[in-house]
Image (tube, rainbow, N blue to C red):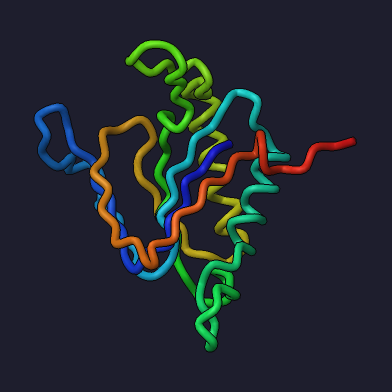
Length: 161
């Protein structure tokens, strides 16, 4: 799994249809203080990656304490999460000018993994709002800091010896 995590003072998402107008079947989502996360899934991702990444996100200390130091987690500050599925995080641009997305998970697997990841975050006591998997979305945010962190289970998660 690969995420781009941004600390935000607010974030929102809506879904648009093929005409570029709001999709009335989707209720726009918004959060205040917390994280806006773009989440990409590969076919090799499973329970182990979900558990590790959810723990990392919930415990990551990037919110300021009373001394102005990034020393508090999203749980500590009562923050919220806006989770957006984003297969383009697996874009391969090594050859040519058109990205290849062969590293992105197949839709059925990616959607289920993303849902399970969001549930793992909720089980940590954090309110999680979501975009719509596979939809054309418009995401707005106010990056606080700015703080933007990329976490990739392929390179950041410890492997079994």
